[in-house]
Amino acid sequence: MINVKRVYEKPSAADGVRILVDRLWPRGIAKEDERAALWAKELAPSTELRKWFNHSVPLWGDFEKRYKAELKKNAAVEGFLEEHRHDKLITLLYGAKDMEHNHALVLKAYLDECFVKK
Image (tube, rainbow, N blue to C red; front, top):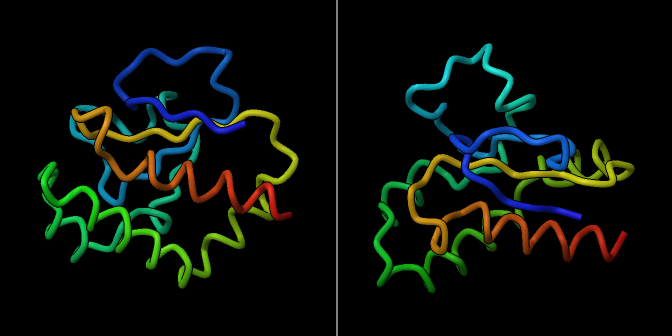
């Protein structure tokens, strides 16, 4: 099971394995902070895609398509699936303020599909 949560929210025992999936480290959080146990920045959208999207809701549909295309070509996805295949619960952490239009939601859906196929 995969959940998504803002990295700024208080950690919970129900989060399972907490993984930050932003390319950039979130502002105001020390790297030693327990809020993000792991950092999988290689799963985040490319810098070019992230800058192009710039959290613009009208671009959301195109962003989803482009990010999924990036994930299909991303070798780090296979390593992530292998490393976390036995984890019962994973929480993908992100820093964006928009809880309905962020890359962690796209990544969650993509990983859910991949885990089902495995």
